[in-house]
Image (tube, rainbow, N blue to C red; front, side, top):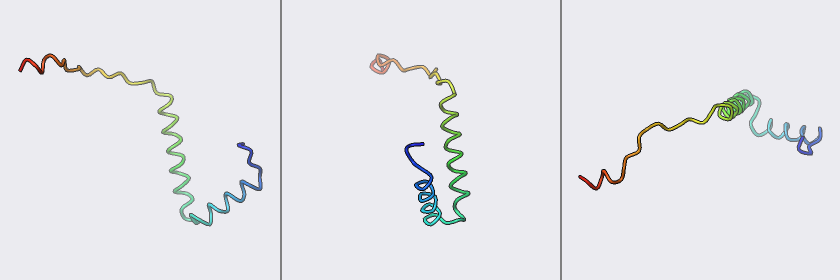
Length: 63
């Protein structure tokens, strides 16, 4: 996992706990989960096709 061992992960988690506090961790987790779900949804959906008609530049010159 990116060359991180257990001691490095523990240090990172402790720093996150100190910086954000216990109360913010659920909000951070839910926000991260929503972001990951949105990314996966965006990657799995097919590309949308633009069906709006394009204005012909020559039509603007006539008026």
